Image 1 (tube, rainbow, N blue to C red):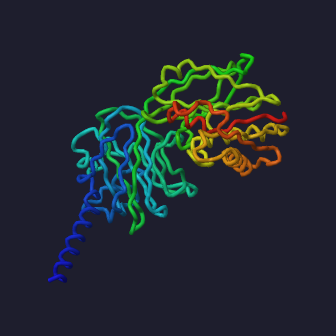
Image 2: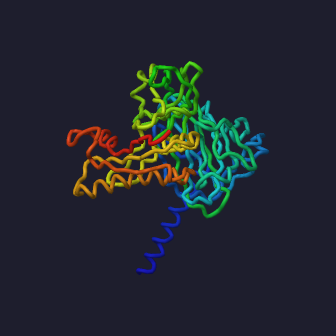
Image 3: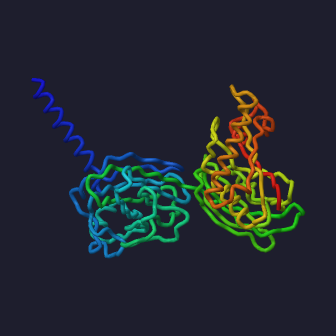
Length: 398
């Protein structure tokens, strides 16, 4: 009786798994996903085969940006709930899986019928990946300028897409290889924000700078330059409930980073930034090299600021600095322990700069423990406590 029961359970489980594997393999059975400011779908069960209908091929679609044929495909119907700029990351669970994708805009309710009659072409498609792309990711991002990437070696990402609330899109993914491990898809819709301001030195003289807008992971969203008069004016997308860094860099000034969110929209329309000239004996707060609580590990969004510091040291060969670590209180540590701990934070940054090719002989380290907190406990909120966990830079020679 037990053997029969186990067999029944196995057959039932197999049939259920098979159903889950194939249910999204055809356009008509596409999984519906409502896309908000930030939406994550997955991990999915790996697709097996092309479903009951093979909707896609270059011959049928009459475009070089269609799959050669469907191998192991997944269909998604995307309902746009907010207007803005759409980005997408398709993340294979197994990095060796090779995902291609096409994105279609649906103007009518009979999209799948029109597709089968070969009347619709994709508005975004990536059929090849750059071999250097990490972990097999593909999708849409802000950096790419390509709407389509055809067969052969090419970029892993296509250009982001402007979408409006109420629009419907169809996304088809195809894993070239069998026995895949499924995937996760991260969708994000950002709002266009005007960035307008001027950059000066500490004598109120306009200076030219590079500007990089980066997200929490340290990824670059937009790269800009000021005009000769130090002014800038550009539009870039920000997502609700996300924080960003606005990084300013000039070869002869100390770089600065300002943390921002979508709530700062009005302020960003008239922003004045001062980049102080490099001077021996001056101490500078970079503004964004912060650390995980209780750790010497820097936060991912600190990377652009650390890269700017490396660029500054490479450009100015006589520049020598001291990196000074700080903490947000000391918990159970004694005086000696907290000083050593904050020196550890400074050492982490020196090690990063060394990997970037900076001679460690140009960098001293120090730690101030909890003696120079920007915000005193216990009143400091989470954001202020994070700002306490920082390093500052003292110019020793220039």
